[in-house]
Length: 240
Image (cartoon, rainbow, N blue to C red):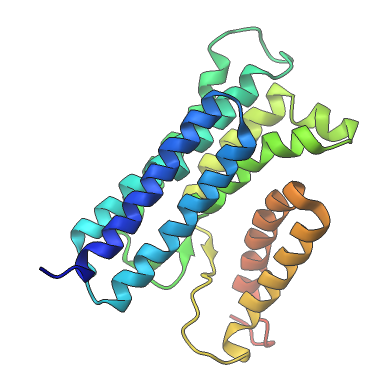
């Protein structure tokens, strides 16, 4: 029995397990613990592919399992979070009790992206559209920003139905937008070839240190903006 071939899929299932636990904590509106388990699930999601390539056991089963696990951790959970944010929001659009369910537009956008990713041959070395794990971290950070922020402006912003629905719509769009985004995979161990990744990781570290949870959405926004800039001009000065 080749144990190695089961290791990547087992790690993928740990991602799914973390996503299920996160859903329980979201239902109890314990968003801090939910954020931790989503982050842990994304950690497992990164390493399942790493070990599959290391052990040379990549296959169709692993690909499908990965998407199904991501659908929970990075699809259902962020939609569920937005549902609760809308449920507790100021009713500046309508008192309609069905509006919070629009939060699951994020889940539908994530589902479409994950399905399309599996058949899109262009995304082997980079991404087109925001990856679902990044979108999930963005959404999971919002209630924590709301909880720990002392800013009245942030409070008004993240409790407004208008703003939350705009975030929901933009999330579904950016997940599937035809915008190339760079990957954090390191293929060549040279400073020049990894300059963009180094700049991003350094910026991310500083944002998280200085802004804590509020730094998470800043990191995701910085990731998209850096990718857009990089699409026009490479960081070594050559035009793309």
